[in-house]
Image 1 (cartoon, helix red, strand yellow):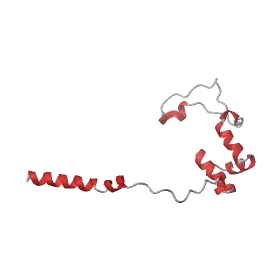
Image 2 (cartoon, helix red, strand yellow):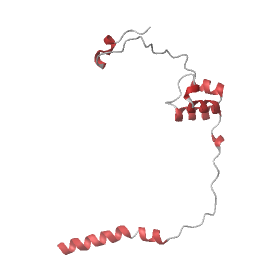
Image 3 (cartoon, one colour):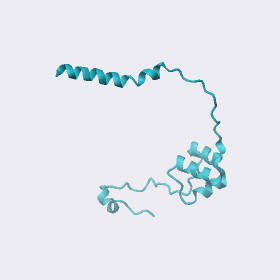
Image 4 (tube, helix red, strand yellow):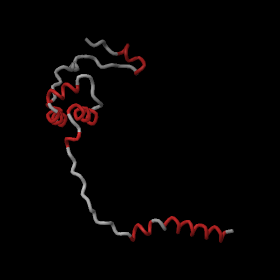
Length: 116
C-alpha cells in the first residue's frame, strides 16, 4: 500500500510538471505587429470629465460636471494636485472658541452644542 502511494505521488508530480516543461523550452516568437499607441482623446467631452470625476473623487456630485466643464478638465486636474489652490471660502470655518463635543456617539446630539 505504501509503495502504491509513493508511485502515485511521483506520477502526480510528473503530471503537474509536464505542462511547464514545453513552456520553458519554447522561445517567444518575435512580435510581428506593434501595439496601437494610447490616444488620450478616446473619451470625448462630458464622458471624459465624468471619467475623471469618478476616478479622482468619490463620484460626481450635482454641479461638478458643470464646474469642471467651465474651468476645463486640465485646469481642474492641476487644481486637484494642488489642494492649497482650491477656494474653500464657502465652507464654514471651525471656530476656535466653540466647545468640543463630549459624550458617546449614541448621545452625541445632546452633548454637542448647536451650530449657527
